[in-house]
Image (tube, rainbow, N blue to C red; front, top):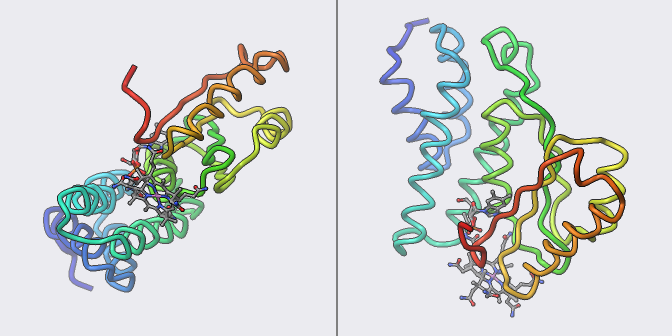
Length: 192
Ligand code: B12
């Protein structure tokens, strides 16, 4: 098999995500391993860079929702196949901690949350994704059972954003807030 250069592999990884070509994404991943390129580099500079480009195009109205969803799904599938593999460990992926993530109660938006989950996986975290419309009580129960390093929530609506605050309070009331960090995100939130 011909060993391709770093540049051409990264270019093809970006193209695979942008054109929603899962077969191409699979072969790029295998080519990268064959060429001895670190998996983390391919994930970050290739697949993740592809999804960022799609997100920008979506914001600019150049691609539409189905494309955004399909690209996010393609990247998630590819990363899920690669991450638990022996190759991932062999090629230097380091475990940095466990993150519990979900879209907060009352909110079914998943695309941004899944992109964040995948990018954290790429960065070496074990990510437990609880899905969407996750009740505050479920976050509390899972936190007690799993003891994650971080509890992360997403909210895309101003009305559901308040449930992120409820979770903060309930984690504190349950006496477990001090043992972890929380992370909140989603469009209605300010950087602050
Ligand atoms: C796609 C979409 C939907 C899809 C969701 C499909 C899916 N599987 O997710 C569908 C059609 C189902 C939908 C439904 C609804 N939607 Co909607 N939807 C959108 C839309 C068009 C895009 C959101 C999106 O996916 N963006 C792309 C992703 C990549 O960006 P993102 O989500 O912002 O995520 C990024 C950051 O925010 C951040 N981030 C996100 N989460 C987290 C978490 C952490 C921890 C961190 C660190 C960062 C982070 O990182 C992400 C990656 O960069 C927005 C409008 C818009 N253009 O934003 C409206 C929007 C969010 N929806 C809205 C509404 C009102 C609804 C509905 C109530 C409509 C209705 N009347 O039925 C329902 C919601 C029902 C419910 N109970 O949740 C409103 C919310 C208004 C508000 N501010 O409250 C918006 C803003 C549209 C509008 N202008 O009115 N929606």
